[in-house]
Image (cartoon, rainbow, N blue to C red; front, side, top):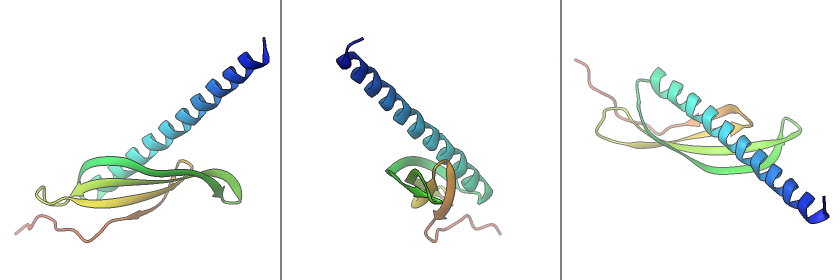
Length: 104
C-alpha cells in the first residue's frame, strides 16, 4: 500500500466518522425536540442544524452544536426555537413567548 492510498483511506475514514457523529447528534436533537414539543403541546414544523464545532465539553474535547426548530402553539402562527447541545446531550432550549389554543 502506497502512502497516497493510505492517505486516501485515512481521509475516507475521517469523513465517514465525521458524518456518523453529525448524524448521531442530529437524531438526538430530533428526539429531544420532539419530546419537548409533545410535552408542551406544540406542533413541530422543522429542524435544522445551525452550528457544529469542536470544542471543550466538561474539560474534554467534544462537539458543541446549535439546532433551530420551527413550532406552532396554535397551528396558525410559527415560532423559532433554539436547542443547544454538547455531544449528544441537550443543554438548553430557548423558545420565544408563543400563543396557544384558547380552551374555554
